[in-house]
Length: 89
Image (cartoon, rainbow, N blue to C red; front, side, top):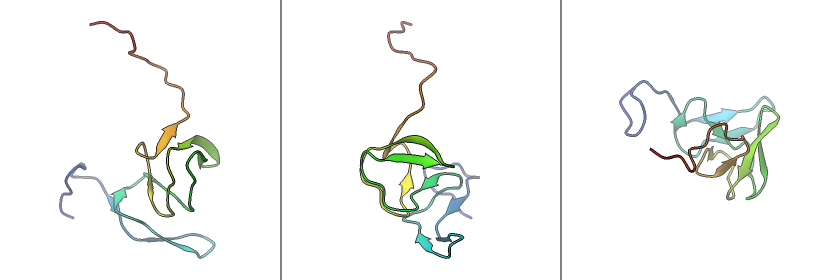
């Protein structure tokens, strides 16, 4: 596999149709690194997004079925454990 700009040379990519156990297929909108999340169904702006049944964030805009779900369209619900706000050098 050739290199793709913006990703590590050894990253694997997924650009196929995913078939769920129920037999329904989801066309993946574009290639993404293995292990990243994709929408199994349409997600409305403001809706909670779950991973393995646990809420991980809130959609910041509508997300289409098969679309990459990441920081560009998801606000994390995880609490930051470190903050540099107010830090001085």
